[in-house]
Image (cartoon, rainbow, N blue to C red):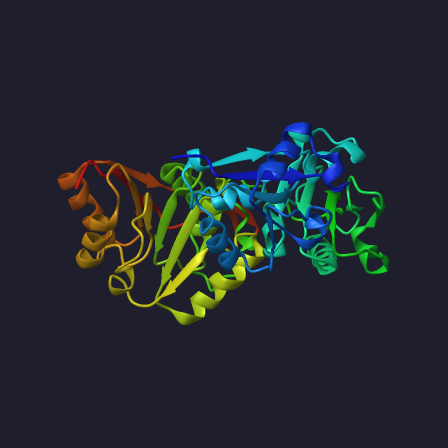
Length: 403
């Protein structure tokens, strides 16, 4: 297929700052698509200018409608870094379009702040929940974030203060690379005094207050990090469970009988773009999961209420599956096993005799590994200290060989 679309990153300084190669692409185009301020000065008798109207779905459809005709889409900076290039890549074949990046706003921001890019987190909060910041709020971490508008600053500062990072240094980098570029900074706990426009990159240099909870992406968060009614896979067992599930980028987990959602939440925190669906029949626990997914930075966790296995029907097949509730139920297990992709991993934890018997029988039939996890914690009997055992967990891990 012939390449018909060129996605050109335009610097904030405008068309005059384009490279000669990018300028030639613009000159040859029959159709140029971009926001109005980028189209200024590009009018010509032999080409059509199409202003971006702000509706992503409609604009993607319109752009695809130009297939076969030389078309340029003017983007900001690097169109493949949280940009329209990455979006269109889901709809077009690679040979249909070219990408021509300019320095991104992330690169310009890092240069102004003297932050090494390889040690800096970059993420987009443009049109996305600010809760996505949570996994990156760690002592000494540096974050550069794209923003929606001035409200993003206030919401991010509020999140930092609630996490115990009120002294984090915030830098607002406005109109980077343009004639009206401006930088201003202050601490998160004083963000309501900042004056800023709507077009900026937010730099966050994380500084933890004394006693701020540490919530790293490594599985095994403190139990106190979750809001729960007691239905929670405890920290030590949770860490062992996630190790067996083995999160990886883009993989989908089913957390069946999700309780407080801890397994699904930590799965998503552990790997880039990891996805999860939490299945839970108890509506009060569904509410807990909803709050926990926001508080721990994975607002994209999908929640499916209802009784399993009926609630599992027509859901996308998982790469990994955790069965933590109603483990002895044969109908539920068979539905889970049939849904699991080939070479997918299933981990089931049981604490009752019925659950343990079911796991032993399934292991004898399907193989895999059985492990008994015992944890003891410090307690007291009278004036003496003892290590009191919790309920032992029998864990079955198995990889599905085929259909």
